[in-house]
Length: 172
Image 1 (cartoon, helix red, strand yellow):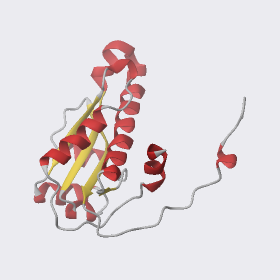
Image 2 (spheres, helix red, strand yellow; image 1 turned 135 degrees about the horizontal axis):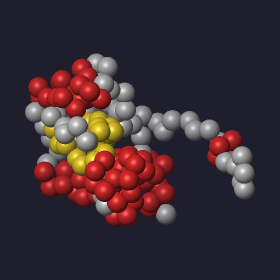
Image 3 (cartoon, rainbow, N blue to C red; image 1 turned 180 degrees about the vertical axis):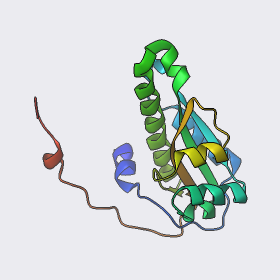
Image 4 (cartoon, helix red, strand yellow; image 1 turned 180 degrees about the horizontal axis):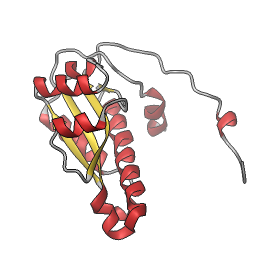
């Protein structure tokens, strides 16, 4: 039951205290991301960890000026690594790399929650700018920017559509 409680407790946090996230905790979060399901266990995802204030500010600007990114003590950018998956699955490997990355993102968010930290999945950003800022190879796609820190807010969980509205049995 603890796992389900964790799923429903997770919320998006955009305000952080000045307290740092220590390296040991950060490694647990990254290990949780890497424990996510992966097509063929190829783990076609990579993590870029950013603590540098100037780099965080540049990422925030590339993310449509979402400045809370710069205020988090640590930011993880999760990337899809296409060749790692495409070498086995061909063109379909692009999709699998993106799925690997997004599964890792959710694991990271859940680990952050389990560790009583806060984070938010930021998907609104200029991919080209983020790739340039982080000097990503051309075969890697940034999938999410995740600012992480100690929460300075306590939002209530957001309303969700009823599952009955989203669920189709046997066919659409």
